[in-house]
Amino acid sequence: MSIRVERVAKKVKFLIATAIQRELNDPRMGFVTIVRCDLSGDYRHCRVHVSVLADTEGEISRVMHCLDDARGFIQRYVAHNLETRATPRLEFIRDTGAEQSVDMSALLDDLRKEREAREEVPGEGDGSDDAQGEAAESGSAETSAQDSEPTEPEPTEPEPTEPEPTEPEPKA
Image (cartoon, helix red, strand yellow):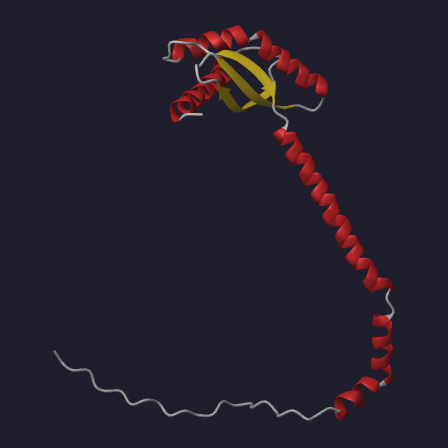
């Protein structure tokens, strides 16, 4: 797609969004987002990808029918405000990218929770924690610490250092 076509596609996207937001007064219209516009090179056809925020498929279907019903009005608004020889014929297509993103995020959250649950289980069922606790209670841990090589004690006070002599500042 050429740079000019991309610029005109951005302008068409802006005009469609403006028409839906400000000019279209249909109670069936819900929350609609214009995701992108695919404009043909001759400016005759434009596929408008829309994302609809709704709870049920019925509401989404209702909003898509509303957009199809208002296509002529929106197309006339775009034609009036777009300064090209040809006016694109609009085709509204439902974009499910946002829904797929939400679904994928939910799946990743579920996997993360499962992994955290699996990481907690081996520490509880493993007997290693109990054996260490019993050894500490019986005093065997103290004797093994005494048998190891002695370490140097850490100094409690830092050694004094002589301050560096400073030269007097010259008077200007």
